[in-house]
Every structure is written in C-alpha cells, then in structure tokens.
Image (cartoon, rainbow, N blue to C red; front, side, top):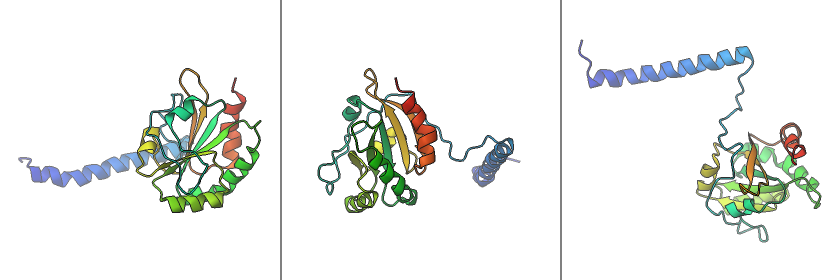
Length: 199
C-alpha cells in the first residue's frame, strides 16, 4: 500500500495521542516511585548571573517606587528576592498576606534581603490596586507590560520568584528560583538556608 500525504496527516493525531500517553505513563511511574514533583521546572538560570533584560519602567500610579534595570542588580549590596506577579493571577492574590508580612519584617536596615517586584503583562491601574492590597511590599518595581522582561528571566508563569545574591564579578547571581505562591514554609525551608550560607 502506497503512503500518501493524506495517510500521513491522518496519522498525526494518533501519534500525538501516543506521545501524550507515554508522557502520562512516565508521570504515573514517577508518582509510584515517589520522585515526581508537579511543581518542578527546568531552571537553567539558577547559578547564573542575572540575565540581560530591557529596562522596566516604574508604575505610574506608584510615585517614589523606582523601576527595574539590569544595572540595579549589578550594584546590590544584599540579596534581592524578586517576585514576578500580576493582579489577574489568583495565586498572586493568595500570596499577598505573606508578602505583606515579609515586607513588614524587612522594614529595618539590618534586614537580610530586599524585596523587589516585576509586574507581568498587567494594566497600571489594576497593578496599583493590587499593590495597595499587598501593602506596597516592594522597594523597587518594574512594569513588564509586553512580557519581554519575563521571557529574558525564563518565567513560565506567575507567580514566580528568584533569589539573587550580590556577586561583584557577575553583577548578581541567581541562587534560587521558585514557582507558585510564596509562603512562610517556602521562605523558611528554601530561601533562608541560602541567606544563612551567604559569606
């Protein structure tokens, strides 16, 4: 029987379904073995310098809150926790209480880190309302309305967070990357150990 283009096109859905089936079986096998983490993602930037990204302007409705540039990370003196969020993101709204609590604990100069924000594909008025709900937790915030900055950071969704350590040679180095809403448990178990290990 001669294979035609019509036969090949007809086979594509079956091949796609087979690929999905194989992936599903592998996921189930991982669950059975106890090592599948549905929150795990590929984090190629971990251990790397802060990426180059376009300068992100400040939020117009938040006077006194500066925007975000690559150069800002080159001059950090203490670690920075960068939160990537959007007002339309439900998990971002769910993490507001923790961000408010964290910002309050970072109010003194002796704090272990700074909290910065990257607002992803949002409208300024909505973002300003979100910030008001969150108690204005950030000391620096960049508006990434076209999403290009987030692409350069390797963001796959919101919320995400990055912990950046000062590095005079690299101009800031990413040591941790997390997805999903930040919580006290994540902060204590995944971020604090990096801060305590800081030379």
